Amino acid sequence: MLFQMKPRFLPTFTFTVCALAALYLISISCTNRHLIFPASEFFYPLLKSTPFSTHKISDPPQATHSRTNLSHLVFGLIGSEKAWHHRKAYIESWWRPNVTRGYLFFDKAPSPGLLPWPETSPPYRVSDDLTELLNKSDIRAQRMVHGIMEVLREVEYENFRWLVMGDDDSIFFVDNIVDVLATYDHTKYYYLGGNSEFILSNYLFSFNQAFGGGGIILSYPLAKALARDMENCLKRYVFLNSADNTTRACIADIGANLSPQKGNHQIDFRGDISGLLSSHPLSPLLSLHHFDMVEPIFPSTDRFESTGRLMEAAAADQSRMLQQTICHHRQSNWSFSVSWGYSAQIYERIMPRSYLQMPVETFKPWIRTPRPPNYLFNTRRPSRDPCEAPHAFFFESVERKTESDEILTSYSRAWPRDLPACSSSGNHSADFIQRIQVFSPAMKRNQVRSLKYCYC
Ligand SMILES: *[C@@H]1O[C@H](CO)[C@@H](O)[C@H](O)[C@H]1NC(C)=O
Ligand SMILES: *[C@@H]1O[C@H](CO)[C@@H](O)[C@H](O)[C@H]1NC(C)=O
Ligand SMILES: *[C@@H]1O[C@H](CO)[C@@H](O)[C@H](O)[C@H]1NC(C)=O
Ligand SMILES: *[C@@H]1O[C@H](CO)[C@@H](O)[C@H](O)[C@H]1NC(C)=O
Ligand SMILES: *[C@@H]1O[C@H](CO)[C@@H](O)[C@H](O)[C@H]1NC(C)=O
Ligand SMILES: *[C@@H]1O[C@H](CO)[C@@H](O)[C@H](O)[C@H]1NC(C)=O
Image 1: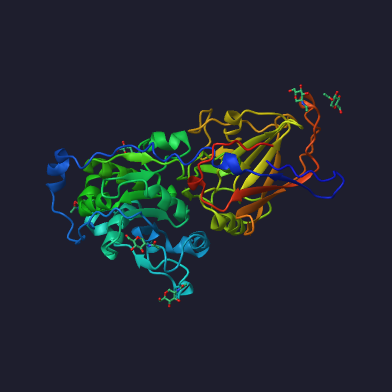
Image 2 (image 1 turned 180 degrees about the horizontal axis):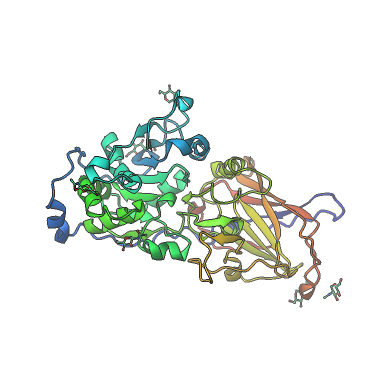
């Protein structure tokens, strides 16, 4: 690593981390997917016991082995007319007009204030009214599940391979989704998505379920099978009041199960999620959700500014987003942790990587619980011990260095740590450092196969 020492008396001190090696030290490991079994004949009598939906769903495309790209994905976003007024910015932060395909489904027609409909938003549709079909007045959950069929009804793209269902406050990282989906066979049944981070949510709904805010990703043949059986499925599980749970139940009846993804985030937390985003698993970031429910993710910003800032980094390189690099500076006994495009920390002692990979519990659980465990991962407790508390830096800017073919991200100090130096590791205070710069190659993370460590 490059250690650009500048005199200590300069007003801003910049620490340059050449994070080259470690960022791709652990290259994308999306090979641990689970085999999904084809539709079980066993369930066919059940599926056929009541009439099929009358909506015509086209046949799946011919299997083709060209690499999956964004044009093969169709998005189905389920929103409410009321919430759209303030949630629009979340979707528009990642939606690419004329490039991403799909529809936004509203519970009712948009009010005049939302019209004319902007080109920057996904085209909208109004969901079918299911109250009569299901003889039920509260059809909120069923509307979302039925959305799967309604998207398929709209699209007749010949190259359609994957359906990505989300909420009106789901933020998707579409390039990473494409990269992950490209490793799966789209002609088989696949049901991908993430668990809730909060143990109790999984316990109450299912540990085997994709939580919809983080995205429910279905291969075309599975989406089609689900759409074909949609009305029966909704009737079969009409007593369930959760869309995600109903979707899981219907998919299980077809014969498929969840292939969990570590990059889909339901974000079932409250408060400050910076601890989680600073120790993300080394898996491509696919989605973030519940931005209305948590504090803005960058200091001194509102929710939309912080979404926009995150997307600035994502525009430069999605493959490295939130990927954690840890390295040590032996001369001062410091540990660096960088979450690319989001944050950086300096700890004033040498800490093992396995330790720094555990998120600091800056957040609160979704629902107050009497005692841990709350999360599907281990955490570190926030601390005011000078040997434990980090100096916190947050992503500020990104720059492409064409001459060296690198991307430079800068992270600036969020607040003074306001603690003495860690004396047991030599009293090397990092108080004077104001900014950390990280150089990474202008090449996708998964294309770099180096096994060197980053060395400070
Ligand atoms: C995506 O793949 C299809 C082949 O299935 C190809 O025709 C198309 O040009 C590709 N699109 C992009 C943007 O690469
Ligand atoms: C999308 O495509 C249409 C027709 O090709 C074009 O008129 C419009 O300007 C495009 N919109 C954007 C935002 O690129
Ligand atoms: C609809 O529900 C009501 C009460 O929940 C019930 O009385 C009625 O028989 C149901 N109708 C049908 C067609 O199932
Ligand atoms: C989820 O579905 C299962 C049946 O598959 C049911 O036992 C469970 O109660 C449901 N959970 C919720 C919260 O609806
Ligand atoms: C670190 O500094 C503190 C107070 O400034 C002092 O008491 C301690 O002895 C120092 N430790 C080392 C290892 O230099
Ligand atoms: C680093 O910390 C160890 C104790 O953990 C100490 O023995 C060593 O002298 C320190 N090195 C420096 C350069 O301060």
